[in-house]
Structure formats: structure tokens, C-alpha cells
Amino acid sequence: MDQSELVAQFCAITSAEPSLAEQYLAVNDNNLEQAVALFFESGGASLESQVHDPTSANPQSTQSPLQEDPVRERIQPVTERLVNPGEDYAMGRVHQRGQIGIFNQRAPANVFRDDSDDEMDNDEELELLRETVGQSELTPHQSRLANLFRPPFDIMKNVSFERAKDIAQVEKKWVMVNIQDNKEFACQQLNRDLWSDKDIKDVVRENFIFVQYANDSPAGEMYCGYYPFSDYPHISILDPRTGEQVKVWSKVPATMEFLQEVHEFLANFSLEPGHRNPVADIPKHKQDFNHMTEDEQIDFVVRQSLNEHQQSNDQIDSDSDLYMYSAGEDDDEDDIEIIDHGPQGTSTAASGSTGAQTEKEAGNTHQPTDVLPAAENEELTEQDIFASILPESIPEPPADPKTTTRVQIRLGSGKRIVRRLNLDDKVRVIFSIVKNDVPEVKGEYFTLTSERRNLISLLDQTVEEANLKNSSIMVEIHDE
Image (cartoon, rainbow, N blue to C red):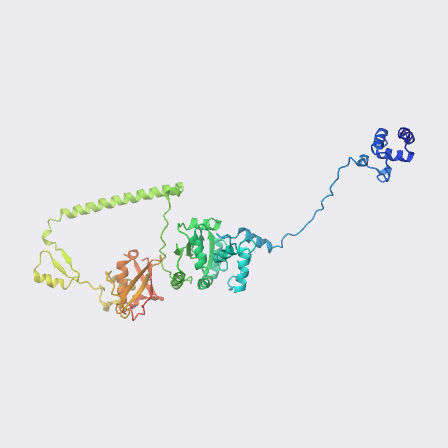
């Protein structure tokens, strides 16, 4: 059926004008039934605005305007730069991964800059506080607490444990590590009282690469695996060359006490090549058997078994010697002389001597402090001179500022012994006291140093002559 016949039929059915019939037929692709239905549905309205070119009409134009769904315009692709490389991203990373304190303190973006050795003035610290505590997030009371217990971001290095050792080797500094547990208030006291002190900041900044880790952080967990401990807060000084712990604090020290101990450490320990540092006496951590691995438990049981076997053999040998001594005891009974040392070093014979002989022998029983003649000391080595000094139990003199003084004797483990001495006591008396009163050095060869002077060369000088009044003396144990 051609176009004219379709138009004639459409006009006969709808009584519409031929031009209007052509519009409806064009819209419905010359489908007479659809064109008639559309005509009555639309009320015979003209479709001239929807049909511009009947020959170019697409299939979508066959749908009724009432049946068309609204289609949202396609979203155009947009490319934008969210952050500048190396700037805001680094800041966001620090905020995301930075250490968070118990009072929600977080390190600001610029506290770990490379030029952290420069001191910050008050304006910079105020700006640092604003960035740290977040004025919009905390109340004024919380802000004051956050400032009071703020970690020492200005002296800390934001590096890993291994990286801290590498930096310390290059800069020839010691590594100071502080491990904190945010659940322990003592750790917050450390931030408040110790790390906020200006003198401590100066000495730490000048001589140490300082890092502070939370115990549950990756770096903190790695450190705890290398150097197990149980008490918080934990502060230690490490040799960056060997990783050896040379100094440990396991409590919150007083500010002046900590500063004094750090200065004493720096006076006795050095990273210079050829310097012989004192032997660090760090107490070993006792590992819980229940937390050991299977291999560690097997090694522990084997060591315990070997120790018990060795102790059993030693006991058998001791019993055998005792039996042999008892068997021959009766033969030499008449030759045994029992000596009873009196309080003044005198002795009395229980058998085999007369009263006159007893008095004569009593005058010769006092052992001198120096076993070898003093005239021979110049030809002896330091070890020989040291061996000639015997341990003695010397009572402390009464306190008298005119005739006595107090000295502090320090061991590598941090143990201290405060002892009162007479000003006219010889320096050798100090060696005798240490040999007798300090269990850690019994049977060991050690040196005493004060202000980098070896006191073995001052044995015959008095405490006053050696300038040891109110001094601190370091005990250094040597392996012979």
C-alpha cells in the first residue's frame, strides 16, 4: 500500500487533514493502526514539533512522548590532582600512622623534619601544639592535658629501629630507645617530667639518636623481641655498631638523677675507635617457660638436666674429699692448731703452744693490706698491684664534714653504693672496700676510674689529695 492510500484511509477514519495524517504516519513508520491509535490518544494534536524530517526519523521517535523515560546526561570524565606529590601525601601519612598518645596527641606533619637539631622558639612550639592537639577536636581541658603529656616530637626521629642505628653510626652518636605502653600512666609521666626538660633535650639531641615506640607498634614489637623486658617505661642506650645494650632504665628516674647518669655514661663510654668501654652488666631477662617455642623448651630442659648432673657430680666429689680428709684426720690430730682471730686481728693457740709463744705469735698475725713490699710496686704491672690489695671489711667513720666525705661507687649495671670515707684514707682503701662489699666483682679484675683517671696509680694518695671528695667512681670489670 502506497503513501497516498494510507493517508486517505487515515483521513477517512479520523476525519483529520492530510497533512496531519502524514505526520502521524511518519511517526509510526507508516503503520496505519498505530498511527490511528496515537491520534486518538493524543487528542489529534499536531506532531510538527517532534517531526522535522520524516526521512531521517530513528526508531526511538516511534515511541509516544508519554512513554519516554527521562534519561540522565552522561557524566563527563574528570581528571583532578588531589594532593601535590611529596607534600600533603606525606603529611597525611604521618597523621595516619603517627603515634597516638593516651590524650589523643598525634605528631604534626613537620615535627620529624631533617633539620630537627635546630631549637624551636616559643612561637613554633605554640604552632606545634595547635597542630598536635587539634583545636577543633579537643576541649580546652583536653588540650591542656595533651600539651602536658605530649611526646617529645622535637627530639624524636621518625625512623625504624634499624634505620636509627644506621643514622647513629654515620653521625657517631648512641641510640636511645624509649618503649612505652599507653596503658601505663608512668609512661605518660615520662613525657611530662623527663622529656620536657630543656637540659635533657639538649644532651639527648647532641649525643643520641632518640626514638620512642609504642609496645604494640611494629618497631616496638621488634625491639621487644630483641631485648625482652617486663617493666615500663623502658629506656635503654644501645651501641649502634654492635646493637649491644649498654645502659637500661626500668622506672621513671628523677630529672637531675637521669641527667647525671647520662653525663656519667658519656664520660665513661665513647664511640671513638680504640676506646675501651666498661663492660655493661645488664641483668638478663628470665623468659617464661610457657611462652617459649618448642625448640626453646627442649633446649631449656636439656640445660637444666646437664646442670643437675654436674651439681650431682660435684657433690659426689665433695663427699669423697670429705671422707678422705676424715680418714686421715686422727693421724695428725696432735699437729692441728686452731686459730681464733680476735677483733683486733690477734690470735690465740688452742693447743700445742705456751702462753708466751701465743703472745709472740699474736703480734705477727695481722695481714697488711698490701701483700707485696711497697718498694717492688714500681716494677709490677697493674694486675700485680691489684692482686696485692686484699679485701677488708672497713667500718664507716662517723659523719663529720671536716674529716669525712661521701663517694658514690657505680657499676656498669647502674647499681650504686654510697660510702663515707675519712679524708686521710688512702685510695687503696677504696679498692679493699669494693673487693669486700660488692659481690659482682669478687674474683674479678677491675679498675676504678674517676674523671677519666685510673685510681690504681693513686693508691698511696689520700682521698683529699686525689681530689675524690664527693666524687663518683666508676667500676670497670675486665676479662683477664
